[in-house]
Image (tube, rainbow, N blue to C red; front, top):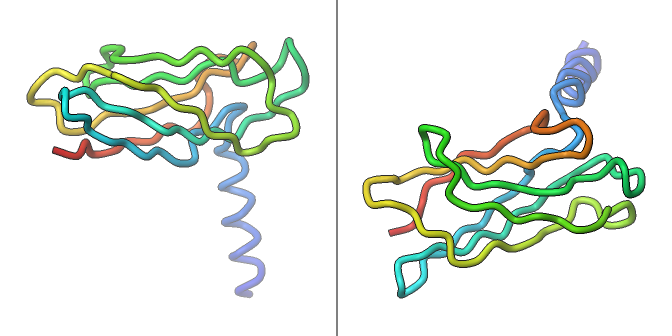
Length: 118
């Protein structure tokens, strides 16, 4: 019975995955007050017409705070981590959401909400 429940949970988790999922985010606050993000993305990359091509940092209201354009597929590097430096975040914002975009699917994957260090 436990094996059946575990199999069902694994299937449900796989069903929720998108073409480009954010699987980890590390964030650092700089002395200047800006933030640096290390974002790990797991994506279904199949060449130049089908790959994770960007990730974004969003305010709680959906305002775009930063974007990193990814210039090539990562077929043999999964998940992969890329950085985004110097993101300016307005005062009062304590959490952000990070999402990844997949060409051609768009923003269909898992996002991650993360608290900002102060």
